[in-house]
Length: 285
Image (cartoon, rainbow, N blue to C red; front, side):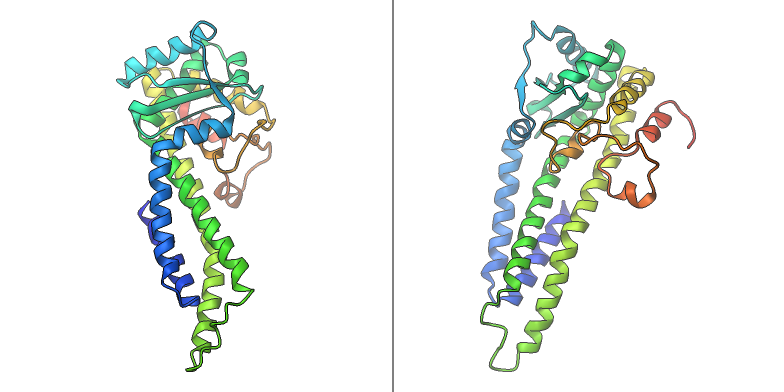
């Protein structure tokens, strides 16, 4: 989060220098703070709306409710709200600003293909995200990455139109041109760097949630088997979205059935399922 704040301040500072307008810097800092505060209080509603989730019925989803309730007690966490996503693709995620305001959402496809031990493994994984405070980290990252991409796109558009300030009367035109070039480079690279940070954090937290979930159920095979079943379905979710892809237990755009190189892994929202399953089963890579 600190690095993201530095990136935002640096980008808006460069923009303010290019346009000789300090208001750009003030606007960027203030707007980023407003977005952070808004995302903190309304993150769960935003994510659930994007996913098209609805609150689950206790009577119609008793097994799911009992799984969440029992594991929440075991983990020492307040029971989160439970939501259902009408989608045949098996998947799940957790969201919210803290453990007292958390939500777990699962797809109808997930409930259809998993047995009780596997379902417990997935729920334990999502509860671990809540217990490890990943849900807040992930949401803040979504907002900051989006903001960096937004202001970078804004700068790239306006930098080519000219603003009447680059031909400074006192010979500052060269300085302005240098700042312009630096600004364009910054605008191109910043969203890439921010996205890589988002993906790196996501992959690290997935491994941690796998491990914590296995400790919670004391049966790592349940989660390992669930991951294999989930990854066997390579279909894309109906409402898959790049902004929220890293929140899911598995890539909502579908798992690629090809051997991934290191560069491919770098740009992936999730670690390879084979690697996750191997770690859960205690096998060396």
